[in-house]
Length: 498
Image (cartoon, rainbow, N blue to C red; front, side):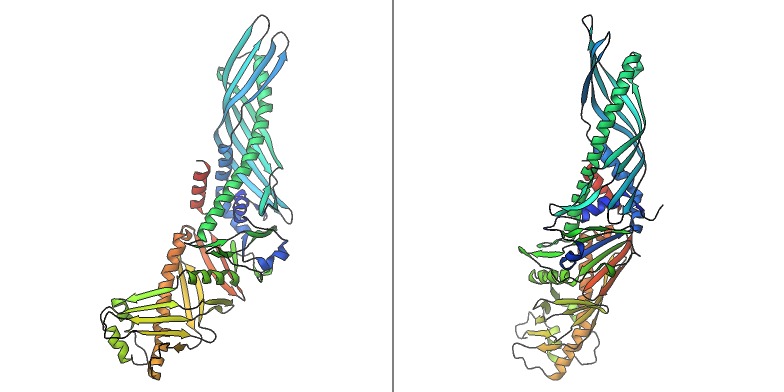
């Protein structure tokens, strides 16, 4: 197969990815407003090609074929009126579907060797001053067809749309069989000519219309799934496009807003650093995500009180059995041995994130509160503050689980708002405990929680192959290969054929 020959699902999937937008700019002008970019490369087409025929079959089977009527005057017989009704498709099979990406122009789609049997009823009547006859007869049409579409992608009415008006069918076979084959030869010839002409018009009109319809259904379907994947509770995201897609002979690239939404507030992105040279063509699928996408999401999560951790009972006491270089303070030992000890940790201010080639950094102020069911043991509240960088984190995804690695890049400063007298040894213990106990514990809670969230959104249904998370200055690239998403195809076909 030629390098730039791809398959129809790539187009349809892509149409689903490029969704509603307030305005569309030229790509170069849109980059600074773009929070996320999706690049689908040629190798992805090889995988998507596996089930191309299923999508095409859905278009043929979902098409509705209207009734058609006509009349003709014949010498010695009189006026013959005939109609075509109840047209249905049976025994559909499709050889293959290919398309070529034309850089800077559009897409050429070729669907070849479509074999189908059309069944229906011919109603006819003829007569003169001597005789008046009315009949109906069932018929079958055996056909072999090639379908060609040359869609043009454009930005219209706030979204990327496809103009599929350049659509044509080539009939290599169109054989008529009347039920019983008992009609007069001249009548069969008349019906053959009529049906040949009529069926060509009807099939062309309805199939081309249904291809566009299926594309829209799939676009809506993928859009809904994408929006669901990026939403949880009151937090959602506007993934509308900022520009029309760019098509080269090797990939299709779409540009999305990536604006976090929470409590009727929508983030703003106007300083994105995207440039096409930041992405390569070695993997099947790329997602480029700006820091300006992550920080509003973090703000929304903070406001939604997502960054809260409670540890109590045996889990808490076992946690502080970790050996540290500094002895545990007496007041803390007394607290841990008390009735129902509870440690509550939460973010005091909105964490700030930024990425570099070394990893992702987070600056935050967190508070910790130790309480007990014993009235004679006072609680302890303190805040962990840092003047610059608190944590450096790297992320990966393997065996359908999110893996986080965090390192402390600077010692923490502690604040005790209630003027609690803390000796230096106690402060040193707390610093070491946060770094060697607290951070690993938070990470151990974050990993399964975020993995569960991804699973809830359906990420575990995708067969991702060696996904990588690459951090750069001001953005992150997620790059991966993948197997065909069968679950999406099954759900789409079920939805389409309902």
